[in-house]
Each structure stands twice: as C-alpha cells, then as structure tokens.
Length: 74
Image (cartoon, rainbow, N blue to C red):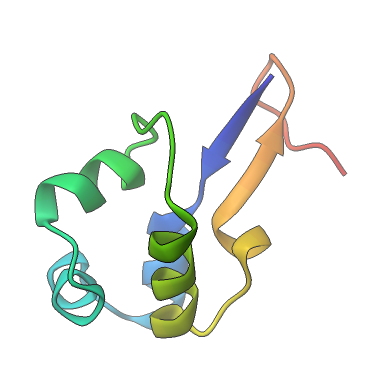
C-alpha cells in the first residue's frame, strides 16, 4: 500500500506551473519535483500547509492512499 501524490493534477486544475508554485511556496524546484514524481519519502507539515495555502486545497486533494495494485481506496 502506498500514498500517491496528486500534485500534477492539482497544478493542471489550477493552471499553475511548477516554477510558479516553487516561487510562491519557497521550495526548490528539485524538492518539488521529487514530491510531484512520487519519489518523496516524507513531507513536512509546514510544506504541506504552504502547498495547500497556495493551491487553495486540502491535504487530501494532494495525497491519495492506494492499494498495492495502484488503485485508489474509497
């Protein structure tokens, strides 16, 4: 089981580039890319809070729990 990051979907919905989000949140492009591609092993609450503030969303909009087959759990 895994947590999937749906940052790419949120960026598309908000019509915002990764570069713009980096500037607004104050996170390096490298760190945000690691998060976006799902390679991150952890995220600080302060980072999650900043992302939610700038994307006007809830943490559950950015993180999704999936089963071993990669399907979303309801």
